[in-house]
Figure (cartoon, rainbow, N blue to C red):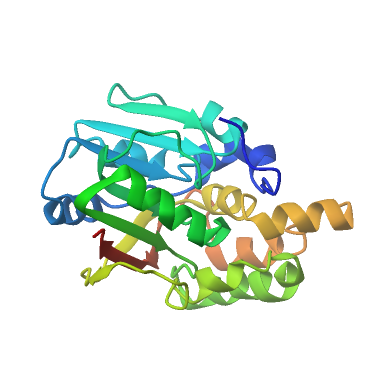
Length: 252
């Protein structure tokens, strides 16, 4: 299936970098989600991007359908024997009725037409299935590094964030979510990165991409000297942590 005419692809130009530099989600997230599901035959990872969440789900579900409206993103997804990738909008997955036990949306819910997406969830989910959407925004490394990244986020590329970004900053708390709520435990996304990996991640931000197009130059260039000074040895791995904002519910 093809994306809807209104689809705005923010990431196709950096799909390879997205696959390389975006962090993987913790195994504890998938274990907890699977424990909430009465069956484990199939899951649908919607807005899969390059498949980070889909591959994590494959450890707990017999099959994972992973869809994204960006053909370029899907083309850069790593293959997995239990994952079927497809190009499709969130609102029209092409999946059969009552075919999945879990629907996941990793840092993508704010892009969707929610009324139509939720109708699609009710169509493809088996009764009693679970829907989970999560996002992350601020990374915690060290206070000096955090301050530099925050300055870049808000002051340098701040004007170039899409309007929908405010929902990520709210942890999805203010988005409609018409499902019987489930309370997830606190879950952090944690990795160890060197400085080049952090810089690669910053270059995958939609605001970085949009600022580069609008300004005709690298918007990160002016921030790099301060980052390098605060980091020290660029090859030194440092812990990076993001708290996840989550909405989880049971499909009636």
